[in-house]
Image (cartoon, rainbow, N blue to C red; front, side, top):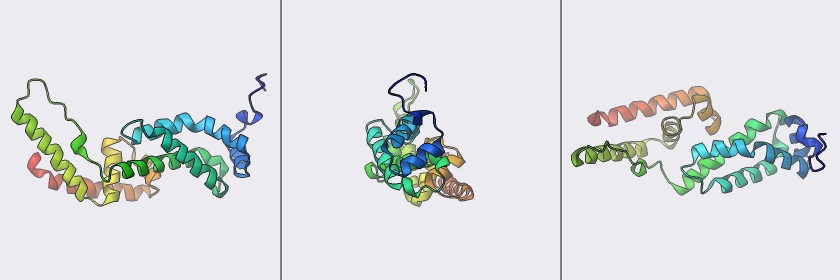
Length: 188
């Protein structure tokens, strides 16, 4: 112990011990997990959500779910990735509930200052066409595409986030890209 009378001995314990105790109902152990992983979960959810307004609500929902589901966690040593998955799912759920679809019409495409109005109108029409094309995709393909192309997630992160195999992510993205390429051919 470092002499801090307020620091719990659990603070220095590894995840397996802390998560195991929290799963048994130890609220002090769960508080250690909250302090340990809130910054990382916040950063991760911030990458998914368009703004920070819902961030605290998403994290709170994630920790409530984690507290309720912790006894079902098979390997307490993997609590970090498990919490990150919960945070990601909660962020995606919030995104879905606030936006029934990924709407690219809200994305402002900055035009060079010397761009004439006809070129600006064409750029906006292109974004609108892409938004329509995305809406025609099956939900899971659209989610993969948005996480990859707009969110910048790796294939592995998408697989973990959506809880699907990596090979499925590759296939979904390939089909989504092929469809979008064909659908957007006139905008090339």
